[in-house]
Image 1: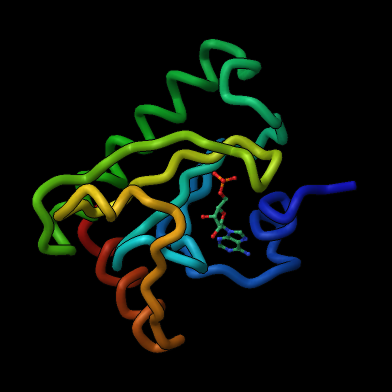
Image 2: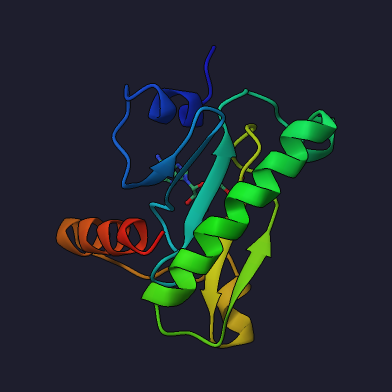
Length: 129
Ligand code: AMP
């Protein structure tokens, strides 16, 4: 069975898309630690990051770099944090999180955003690429 992220990539489940290319897809986390929290996933469905082949791993980091730069231009913050956890969704994903304080990397923290706010953030990050 496909992962929820594969369903998002294939358009079966909606997402606030930021960018995509042939191999990777970036979209806003639906339960963000902070405004602008973005996930970057390889289209290839692999559970654990270090099970990716080296080229896909490197490509994922390069794509994440571009997205992080765009988030940095869009969301006022001290820096962008990058984390890979994967305990919830078994499909590799890089978290890019605008950070101001240590609690912003705590996944128990969540910021509530309206549909309009999600759309606006995704659009602004996308336009900063
Ligand atoms: P983890 O697997 O622990 O690295 O975290 C999975 C992340 O995916 C969490 O931050 C969730 O909020 C996020 N997530 C789960 N389902 C969706 C979805 N449908 N759209 C966007 N983000 C999601």
